[in-house]
Amino acid sequence: MQKLACVLLVDDDATANYLNQLLLKRLGVAEQVLVALNGKEALDLLHVHCQTPFADCPVLILLDVKMPVMDGFAFLEAYEQLPADQRQATTIVMLTTSLHPRDVERVQQLNIGGFFNKPLNREKVDEILKKHFGRQLPAE
Image (cartoon, rainbow, N blue to C red; front, side, top):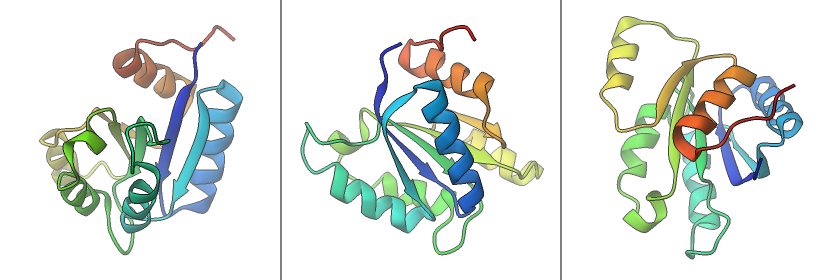
């Protein structure tokens, strides 16, 4: 399977970031994995990594819903203000532990590539790759 150029993990839980990085590395999903602890850090990383069309801009963002400083919803609002050329090749998938009906309804109204409950696992990664990148993980 051809690897994605860059994936951005956005989660305030350092353990979740570490485990997701290990999972993505073990599955051979991405050439590069960036990590941000909140939406503001994620926006800062995007400004650095998405300056030119040939930059290492993330093609996939795995975004937590509940975070301090800037949560997933606030990140998405700010992200929509970025230039279209910085957003066009990026798929955003939200990850959460919250099954509160209000959060689920809000997420379903957003222009994102998907919504999954944590933890991230092989099956969820495979589903994301198939749906958005036309790729499939090799059989175990």
